[in-house]
Image 1 (cartoon, rainbow, N blue to C red):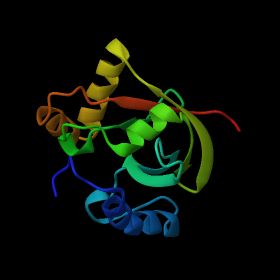
Image 2 (image 1 turned 135 degrees about the vertical axis):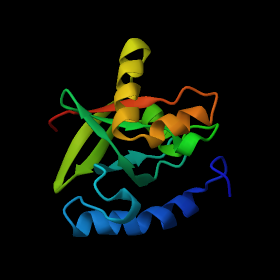
Image 3 (image 1 turned 45 degrees about the horizontal axis):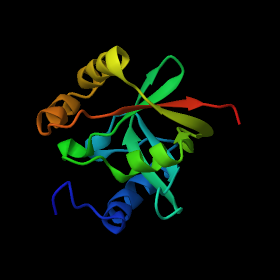
Length: 146
């Protein structure tokens, strides 16, 4: 299965152990993700209306959580990106906290600067961009206080 044909069912099976480990360890996970800041994004399906939970690496910047829609360099955006475009109000679990957030895609110079930050902090992000012709989006998740 390539990165362009990942199904929701496959993603759920892949993500379930990471989600369980995250919740059991106060937001920490081991293995390949050890030491990487991880959050759990709860989004509403753009087509299904179902709630989806996706673990993902993030960077903090000016009170926001930045997530990168790389899909490991696939030629299509991940499902969660489409979910946030359709339904930008979401929830994140960060450590032991659960927060309401509003999603906004970064553009222009801000997107470029934050992608450089991401590539420096998570070198695999530069590799992901080199695999695809699409511009990999960065989404800022801003806590709304609700």
